[in-house]
Image 1 (cartoon, one colour):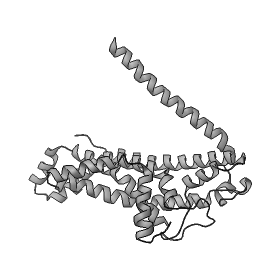
Image 2: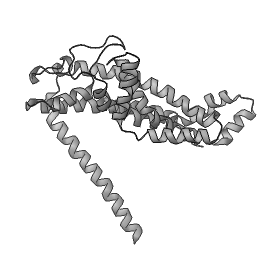
Image 3: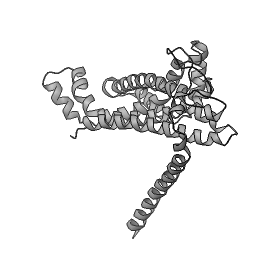
Length: 275
């Protein structure tokens, strides 16, 4: 009896989430599809809705993700490998791991304040692509570290012992055996982290990324515009036409997110192994 009731409760909870998601997507598509055009992708931001586009924001977001993702992945996976494979299991290591897990739940605006203090003011990077990328990389690193540690931990110790028993060094075992086996779990963490980073607005607002910029970055030290900031700016506009532009911007952002997730899922499935 209890099992049947709980099964229905869980099913109802799942359906509520799916229905809300369908309604939200249908509303956005209905409002935004009509605004998608060649001019929408080739025009810069404008206060006049008929001339407004996302060229600067789209290119700026591509720059941002192209820099944020490798910085976060390299540092996070390296940290996870050290903590799981090399670091001694003592109180200090446990303290570090607990604090990394806690950082995963810190609000994004706090990371924005950290980026403003260190990268924008202390290092003098200003509201550049590099400053924003480093800020977002710090924000998503805890998620990738935690998921990477769990993925590495899921690889059986017998695999490591067998590799070392055949004469491989510890690093060769990690690089050739453990990491390929842990790739699916690591990719899952990267998907979750990058999905969060690509839609974040609060850190970009705090470090002073402009909401309107009629130029595209030429280097990582240039100022830029990002899709979340562009959408945030359009939402505040009083004209009714900006509602369609906002929905169109959300559609483009979702399309970018789905494309990145598709690539990550294909990589995860390719390297998926079961022990």
